[in-house]
Length: 205
Image 1 (cartoon, rainbow, N blue to C red):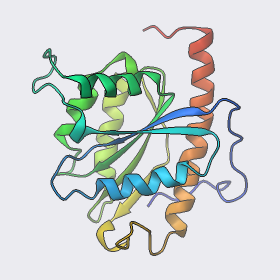
Image 2 (cartoon, rainbow, N blue to C red; image 1 turned 45 degrees about the vertical axis):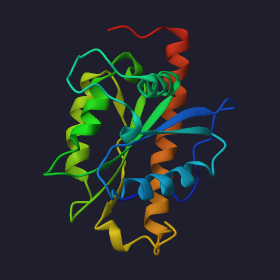
Image 3 (tube, one colour; image 1 turned 90 degrees about the vertical axis):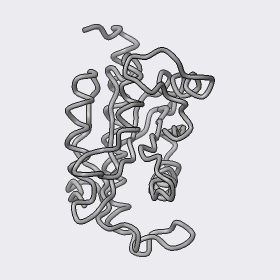
């Protein structure tokens, strides 16, 4: 798990008066996936702060086109696109498959463009011994191409299947809670700053 910033347990960034819309994206579509457990836990952490109003975007329910750039997608994709468009910040919850992230997540990312621009993206990852960090490093390159800003600190769970109980609660939560607080602090700063900048000067490349 990423070490917390030195200030993380001292004082959190003050949230904006108007809550930031935070879209939490569940990247895995596998049967029996663990991503919903991890995502629900993180949404609970974000929900403790007045700074955020949270939406969940599930790639399994997105009704994505099957080919890059192809037309298509039904009402479910339209609803996802609307959530992405109105979001001020994103958190991507991703497993690591074969040293990278799932194809379902890449399909969701590639089906959109302007929705990501000039907005911050944070990551919560899980996997084997690496905790999904190789998937995160690959995603940073993808989001840079889409003119998004990825925040430095992550939350990562190495071998998470034994870390959560049957109710989805962490059995030893302290490190993860501290890492989530650091990530949320950074998203608050970047989300507020970039929302103000977009309102003042529309982003163009």
